[in-house]
Image: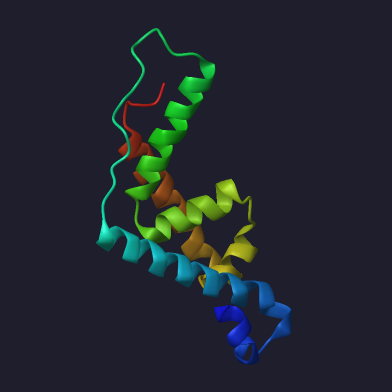
Length: 125
């Protein structure tokens, strides 16, 4: 709705995708910040007993650990990693959407990977 109401502010129709993504990104950030302020719900600490898990449970555990580690990264690092590795975006597309230079994004990705690796520590199988 916010994008629809602000359509007259989209000055360059060729960059509509980036303009729309920035609105969506800002709305998501606002929503998450409000949700965090309202209540904090930690993820379950229950893990399957050693030797009793199957491949699906192991994969879910890895996903959960990566998700938790991503949530502890800075917004800039998490955003860069998710766009690059989850949404498979190119650096030029990311630069347009985030309003950052390609060299800045390369640095965010490098630092984000290092921070993620550090947060995961020895918990990954």
